[in-house]
Length: 196
Image 1 (tube, one colour):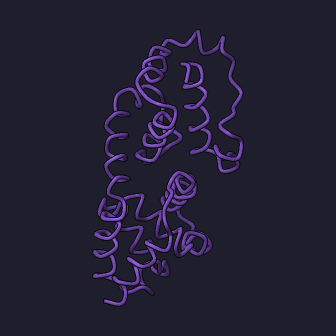
Image 2 (cartoon, rainbow, N blue to C red):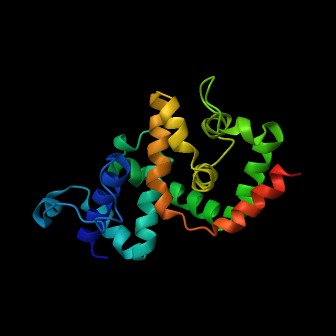
């Protein structure tokens, strides 16, 4: 990717993670931004460095990692990505490389403590799965995979009117297209945990 294309990717990812109606995949990463505006930016050296350092797919995941790591993706700006982007990218890469192992461990901890009926129950506030995520005891990947399998976020959204949940729900929805899993494999892992 050329530096300007990296900049466009950044803008598209920011729009993807902060706007409910925009989808990076649906619009193929297209956003409106002129090359002249890019050339006037003081931080364009950052986009130039990234374009030389990473492949096209790595650039996409580099930005995804920064938005997923943030508690408030709408407040993520280039300066923050310059400071902590590498760390977020490395952390996410590690989690994705050991995705099934991490999922197994985190889901095991969840189902050791709660039964299937309780895990997504939000009658008394945040469901246990969300509490585990907010306490950094569960990764966003595990929470997203649980939503891929159970589709719990729609039910929780209907019952829970809460800004914390709304932020996490948006993050799950926006991160889901970037996680490619063999659903049957993860269902089998869960069956083993729930039936144990």
